[in-house]
Image (tube, rainbow, N blue to C red; front, side):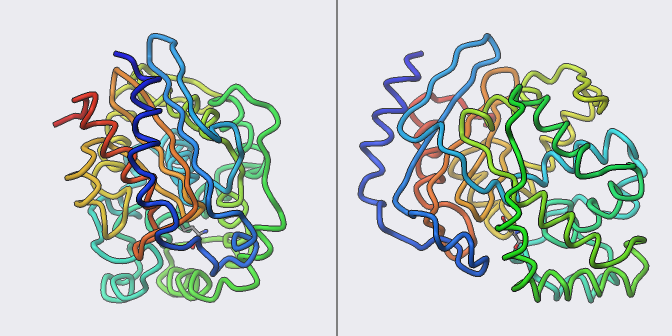
Length: 303
Ligand code: GLN
């Protein structure tokens, strides 16, 4: 399979979508990013790597961090985790409060903000230094020691983080989170602020593609846990567009409002794509289109 040519063809073909949508600006620091950028990187389990355009430019991974946080929490809490956070698609926006109130403080899944804030709370409870542990895990997964938080982005999100603060307060009211609200939110914002490139993300996601038991920086997952994490990406990775992504792309994946999307084809390849302009659901327009074309041209999707 000539993946390199396919990536280049895809880039040409998505040009009509350039300029459509807008980058996230509810986090003021993200509004400074040039929205007209695109990168893509693909890694195969047999060790080949392909990339095109700005694949090595780092960007704010935002909600893609929720995959790594869930992996850490699963590694420490195992199946008990699901007593506190559900694993059903929400059908609502990533920052919605409505369902959380109706369902008395149990988030639908770990990939909407409410669920990820609960996972952040668990990591704080379990770890002596959650900041260092989170970085240690993603640095080990990607094999890159320079990956770091962007504190300007984290602070900027905190300043305008009214909705996430409302979610955290609701969780605290229902006793779902144990630690101080401000500490939990700041850790959540820091995880979202991490900057990685498409090449680094594709490398990091290979561990979830191989489906082999792993141990990165002391966080161990069994192949069964990896399979289940992929299942949650498939059903919940795109909030109220999870059905659309499944329909168009047909791979487990996760998006972030920095414009990044990661996806895995189990036992075959991991892919990361980035372009900051988003649709109304908070997912990258060019990114979604690129992945739709990737699985169409390669005829490699799980369906
Ligand atoms: N930090 C962002 C928020 O909480 C993450 C959202 C996202 O990437 N979908 O709103």
